[in-house]
Length: 448
Image (cartoon, rainbow, N blue to C red; front, side, top):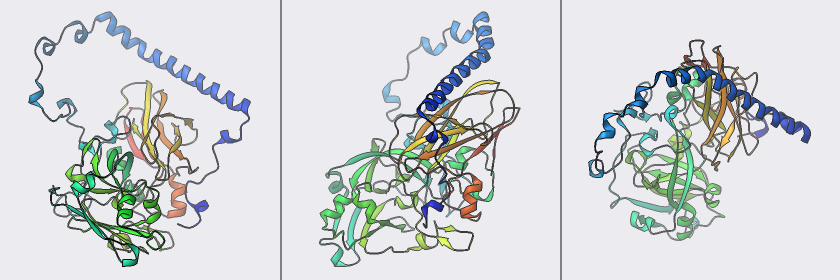
């Protein structure tokens, strides 16, 4: 990784760090005044249409709809809950331009239509290297072995029943593909946030800490410093994980997601969870864990998911997903219908810990306003932010910039490319810009 002080996004602290206590109070008062004026302006913008509806009488409120005069559907008609038919456009979508192996290999989460931080299981993004399978849990096995007998006293094989009898943990974490926002490296302006950032989801995962399993097998932490995770799919996906991540208890083998068993496309019945690390390391259909004393440099570590630098060299094992954010609404492909008040909303995340701050700009990064961080703020999970904005009908450039608990500041494209060049595919965490035209139409643009 090199000198972290030279990595993109490590900027000087926010200006408030240099203010006196009196100045901080003045800034806070200014923010409250800004919010008060925003709501006054919003009220003025909405007053006319509300008054008109009140004076004329709205048929939708004056007359009872037909459905309210009849019996509703019984429970048995829909034993497994489904979304409303009026939400049928909120779907995972594929990009025909991305890798295919006989069928689509990627689907994107519709971030523009989600609230809070949890991704519904049916909308969780997919990335397959050889398609997905619905595996019988009764015949699935997890083996733990070692490249050298000195690393592990007792190799073992676990059934799903074995694993589900062990002590479990449930934690909320984001998972992001290393290629998320990858098309933007080449200045390809895909239209919506679903395609720019949609290889990202956040769920509650349940499973068994990998540390517990390794210790059950008698691991020697002094000698075994890496683990290799292997999947049972046709690509035999394999990834190296540093043992420090296992020792701290964060890495676990998961069978549950959002309160139920994993979905088949998300690795049912067993996958690895490696918080903060790119999704390819969260090996699905997990069948084997091998312990060793050095990285394995398998094909998906030596050829793929590496970063081409300006000097022609590659960065390898750049697994951590750095601090990042995006405004999900208003965003590309949407349209502001009229001038007035809007809630600017988005998500922020960091593979190094918690989000501590998000700033929002409406003029392309010239001026920034602090957004409201909505709880809960959790470790290596999505964090929701909101900001009040009164649109005056003029062109605008919406951006968000996140800061995590390490002090890392999300970089602009200019800052990122100054360090990484422009020929990468993976690990793009630059600031996203949405251009609002006078017509209210919103499109994807890049600001250096």
